[in-house]
Length: 193
Image 1: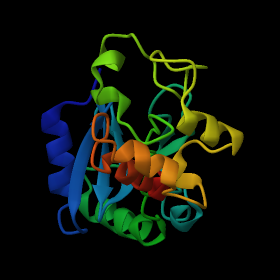
Image 2: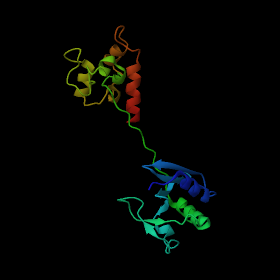
Image 3: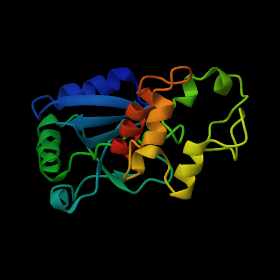
Image 4: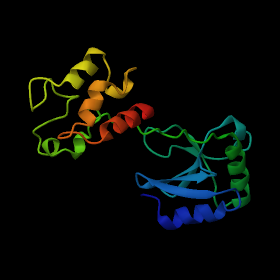
């Protein structure tokens, strides 16, 4: 039985006053964050907190259980006892670190900075992008691709000579250029790596 929305709202009401409270649905169950720290897990309408040495003495008489299959044993918090629940949550909030921000890794799409995902040849599956093919669909070799691969770089932005004359000649070519957009893409991709 998954946790009901009414129950998660009740849990948050019972904990009001301990700090900024928000909850997030995860696989049909809920994580409750106090001041952006993941402190309370609510599964099957049961409130769980991690077994932590800091609250061990306070939780001696409390039940324990596992919130889901494969989880470590947690303390079961009697949420109906709001005063005790708030006391435990405040203690846990003091010793629980903020979650680390996940840095979204940017996918390098090409050696020269072209956005393959915006190219009609890529969308039509005529090309997989130069990072995945041995030679370009439009000819025998690409000098920018060859240069990057010789220097063992993912893209031009990782080169000490960036942006070089060769890349500039491609970026600002009057027929095939993009007014330097590919150079900016290389900068962005390499800054985020």
